[in-house]
Image 1 (cartoon, rainbow, N blue to C red):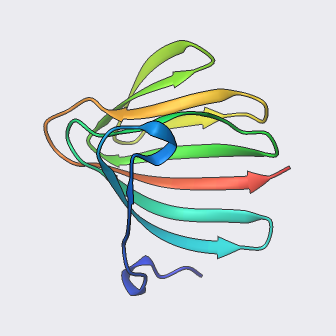
Image 2 (image 1 turned 30 degrees about the vertical axis):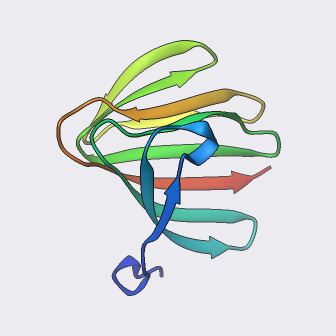
Length: 108
């Protein structure tokens, strides 16, 4: 079990060249990472490639503009963005309120 309420936020500026800061609660696991991330209005996670992992980003609140291998999609609360191994993606808050997501990164 992971109790995110007991994990402190880590602020990360310009994550992968994105704009603004991301606040994340990291839970390192064997061969995986789980986190709750908060991306403020106007902030983003820059484009990056998953060389040895895949990532699921489940939107808890807000809405995200996600790009996967050059194709953009809007992902809202209750929806999930998936980035497979060897793909490039980015995530931007496309709303006026905080974007809160659950991220799971699994090593492959």
